[in-house]
Length: 440
Image 1 (cartoon, helix red, strand yellow):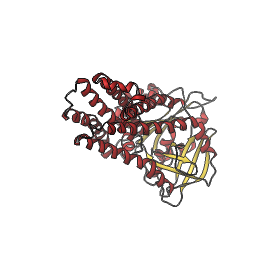
Image 2 (cartoon, rainbow, N blue to C red):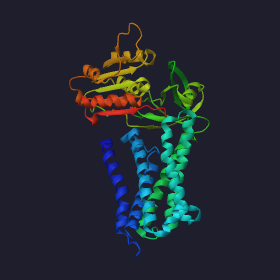
Image 3 (cartoon, helix red, strand yellow):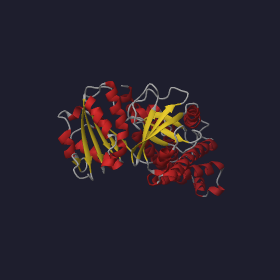
Image 4 (cartoon, one colour):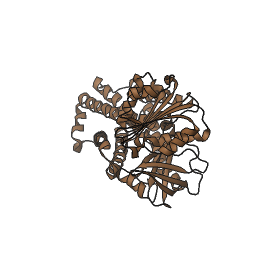
């Protein structure tokens, strides 16, 4: 029930972030020489600052958000609010320029006041944030780590300089209502920043994991087996969640990657991460030596089934997207689940169908139907061929398919295609959970 309340609660908080500063602007006493352009500039500037603060907070690994909304939703909202903050900031600048001739000094920051220079710097950082985000999906390995460091530093600069701009202007912070709002935003941003970049790394530092084993699942996929070193480890995560893993001397820095936990919860705290050997970080995970220390920050994510909510699960995996689903299957087998489940696994070649032997063993213990699909099957392949289409789904789903919960994991294009096919089959969106596996 608590997870179902996350979405409406998040929506209410978002509206509050937009409406509270607008309400403050409407209730404030504008200067005598104020005009409509001035009022628009104040209102849009306040909304831009509030949205920027929320944009800054969202990716800071707050478990209540990632576990309630899912990391895909959190990051999607993060990107949307970032662009919205930039839009309101541009409206703010336009209002300043049109509403006051002196405001045109913003067009020449070298001669402007310190407040103007701070605004120009914050605006430039915000524009660079949005523009460089287009690089994200084209970056991989070390290039992605460079982008990530740049993104974090630009975000910090944008928030700090825009906040400094408001403080140096003085006229808004002199009013008690505005001062309280700015103080609240500042305290919230600072608390979340300290939690993300100070408290969580220090916590990971005293809770390291030891690499116990590296297990090759295929020529391109490796399972990393970790055991807690001097602590209990993660024993209560939900199957399907992920964690950030850092291979290095300390848990500090930007060189880390999100990996899905492929093992079920264990009393020993032992974790398994099945990693595709792509990019610099995936290759580094394959080469790490047993006995090395690594750092784990988790669990996160909402790609998890609520206990007994549905009469059965439909699990759909594309390639290495089987990793979160394996955690679910292993947990179902350990619990002796008696419901009826269906598993679809899709790949290009047969060696990309992971865990086939173990899945067959699990199917003998559960009421689990397994459908395998290959786009490039070998001679004599007994399974299905081609892509997972609406017709293939309809042929293998139970009659009461609308009552089941669906979990789709794999490459973004595959996930989008399957999600669309499920909608055409009449599956409610509330029953479909997705996890897009992207290298970045």
